[in-house]
Each structure stands twice: as structure tokens, then as C-alpha cells.
Image (tube, rainbow, N blue to C red; front, top):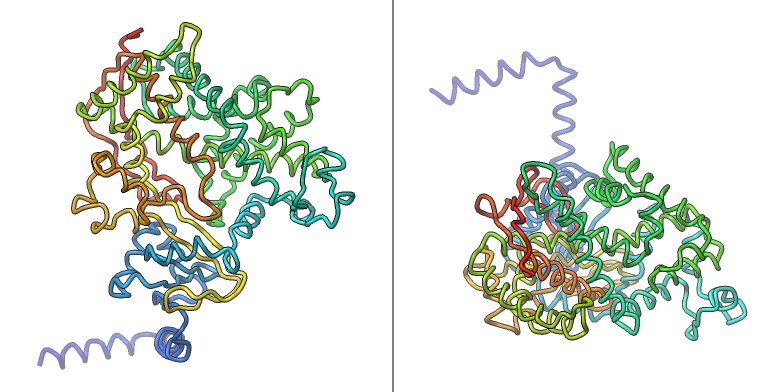
Length: 524
């Protein structure tokens, strides 16, 4: 009886809808049902070797909006859909399909594959996304046929015995700077700059109530120190607001990577950074003589191949982004937990106090830096745990041919992601308290940082060459903050994570939440 009444009610409601609207509704519904049956039932039977795809209802857009809102949740949804098998799968995002690898063995296979998996193709796409012109891209990625044809050698005077494209050769510049013969001087200078910038912040004092907020303080210290270390003094002398301009862009940079509509403000912020860089590049080189090896090599080789100044400014902006965007964020979480956890703070203060005994009256010493780098296991553990707990990064590869991963074949010209977060939250590897921030897991098990599941610095050809420098930046800041100053934390607890703003790096704290503290004086 109830069912009959309900049926009559629905029939009456349908009869009240104008015919043309009912026709459109039925047509769209029929199309979507047919699309879903074909796409996710029939087609997989015809192509059993292809990775399965997480079903969706709206063609073209697929999971775009859900992924931008919380990529991790969508990945976990796909993992559940596949009965937690951790087999490769696909997601439809806007106008493209992306493939995801979750199993540690599969990720290792991806890292080892340098024949049909390319990281340099990803770098090329990153440069295009940053709006570097096609003319510059084509010139930079063209392989010279002879030494005489290679303008990097004939004009810039830079050795290129392997006749690599400038795009490939630039990776050698990176490695020499942050992991090779140029590293030592860079590490010492960066550490001095961090100490100098923190001292300036303390001398100037906070802007209100004598209270510092940790996030903006660390942004200013790390970014200003980084700019002075890599780009010298002239850029910030010309534009004292440069760091603030970069922070404004960095906060919305996700819109660039996700090709987000209505991004006028983000592009305006990006342009302001590049306008400052253009003006700086137009200053004669003799007035910008304190450049790092990396910036010096990038500039003179790009000039040698005829890169326009606006494109060179974009290249320098991308360089700044890669150097700066994630380190201070990972450091922030390590310091936030350190300051708000008395036990962790006590252990790390002992480590940095021992290091500071090696300081000379004239400043940093090699023995001090060596101690910070190699003899601070509690500090290393809290950084590793911050990278495990807060990373939303992925390793990315582009396929240049069909690739067999596990039992699935990923087509050529596809993009493959290895998201770190599912690996980092594997309870079988990291313990039953995987959802808890616990640095002791890395302190008690030194082998854990070498696990297949722990890849905060990526792997294979994309293994971050700057990982040692990043660790040293964090150690240098902590050694100054808690080793030199008396710090009083106000309130309790660590801020929550902002899960709503998309990111391809380290998660940020919820807006408005921060660690607040006072500097009571100097210990030394």
C-alpha cells in the first residue's frame, strides 16, 4: 500500500515535468549510464592488460575536482576500489589520464627504468607550464652535433664533452652545486646567511605584543638566506620586497600546476617576481659578481644560446621555486614539533649545544658544520618524520613507450605518478602508530630511512641532489634558534594541516594557526 502510494506520487511528479525537460533528463541519464557501462565494464574486458580506472560519471572532467580538493583521498578511494591490491591504476583528470603506482616493488621498477621512463620529459613539461617559450625550449633541448656547433662551449666557454643538450647539461650544474665540488662553500655560506637573517629578525623584533609567529619568520629567514646564497646581494638591494613577492606567488602556485581557471591573481604575482628578475638581469654582470656557481652557469649558458631576457627571468624564477618552495615547509613542521614537545626539544638542544662548542669566535667552522650534518640523530629523526608525515609529493615519470609494471601495461606518452603519502602511511613498515607524529621511529631504526617506502627525496634519476643541503638548512636554523636564544612557547600544540588547499609538495598549516613564541634573550 505504501509502495503504491509512493509510485503514484512519483508518477504525478514526473507528469508535472514538461515533456522537453523530461526528454533531456532521460537522454542525459541514458548517455551517462551507457558511458559508465562501456567505460568501466565492457572496455576493461577488451583490454585486460591496461591498469584499471577508478569509475566516474562525468566524461572529460573525471575526478578533477575531487583530486584537486584532496588527491590523497581520491588515491585512497582507488586503493579501496582495487581491494587494497596496490596494483597500478588510472585516474581521469580534466583532459588527460594519469597513472599511479603504489606498490614499493613497482615504484622501484619505475625508478630503475631509464629506457622507457623519462624524468627529463617531466622537466620539459614543468618548464612549459612555467611559460618558458617554445623557441627557448627547442633551442635548449636540441642536442648539438659537434663541438663547433655547441654554443655552450664556443660562446660560454663551458665544457660539454658529452655534447649534451643544455637542458640535460643544466642537471650537471645542479649536481655540481649541491652534491659535488661546489657544495662545501655553498653549505657554509647558506648556514651563515641563516644565522644572519635570524639575528636580524630577533633584533627587529616581532610586530605585535613581543610575539613571533613561526611560519612567517621561517619563510623570511629561509627564503632571504636562500636568495643571498644563490643570487648574491644585488637582487634584494634592488627589490627589498622580492621575498614577499615570491611568497605571494608560492601560496597560489598550485593553480599553475593544476592549470586552474580564474587564476588572474596568481599570474599577476608570478609576473611581479619575473619583472624584478628582468631588471636584475639587465644590470651588468660585474655588478652581480657574487652569484653561486649554479646561477652563474645557468645565466651564461642561456645567454650563449640566445635566450631572451624575459625567458631567462622565467628560468631563474623556476630555479628559485625549486630551491625554496619545500625546504622551509618541511623545516617548519620539524621546528613546530620541537618547540611544543619538551622531550624532543631537550634531546635536540643537547645535540646542538655540543655542536655550538665547536664554533670559533670568528663564526662557523668546518667541524661545527660536520657535527651538525653527522652527529645530530634526534634532529635528523624529526626532519625525517616531518617529511614522512606531512609530504604530499610524488615522483613523476613520462613513458616514451609501453611499460610493463607488475601485470599491467601503461601506454606510451603517459604520465606516471608515485605518490609518497600512501607509502609513508604503510603500517606494516612504519608501525601501528603510523597516524601519529613520532620521530623515535627513525631514531630507533636507522634503516627505516632507507626503506623502499620512504622516498621524500624521490628516487632514481630524480633523486633530489639537494637533499643534503636541505637537511643542513634545517640543522643550521634549529642550532641558531634553540642553541643561541632562550625561547618561550605560548600556548600548546602543533597547528593542523590544511587539507583543502591543493599542493604537490609539503602540506601547510591551517590558515590562522601557528606556533607563537617569544625570544627572552641570548644564551651566548
